[in-house]
Length: 136
Image (cartoon, rainbow, N blue to C red):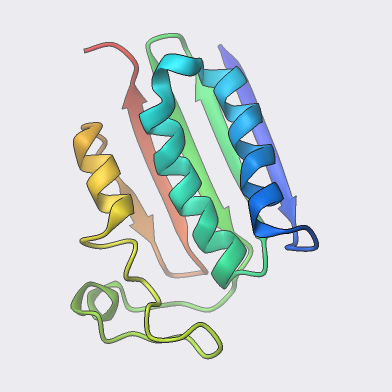
């Protein structure tokens, strides 16, 4: 069993570099044939960069059959997931698209295509958990 943990300490680098550094490390960890999974994680990390000042953490655990992931930002505010699903939630400074990439957007679409049951907890910032099966 292998584990990869990355702590994001802020968006003091460009968004492009933030995402590229993560993408490179993760492809090495999961393997090049799992780029769809990496793209799901990358979409979640875009939210951490854009809406949580780049502060958060990702942990991946690979047992060669599946990868468990736990991704969260260091936010302390809670959010109503039902409002996010309805498209009526906003967060100051982030515009009206807050949450639009999660539900009915790219994150949900990627997870569904990869057959991942995605757990989203919004009680203390945002936390995403799931298991990606590497072999069908």
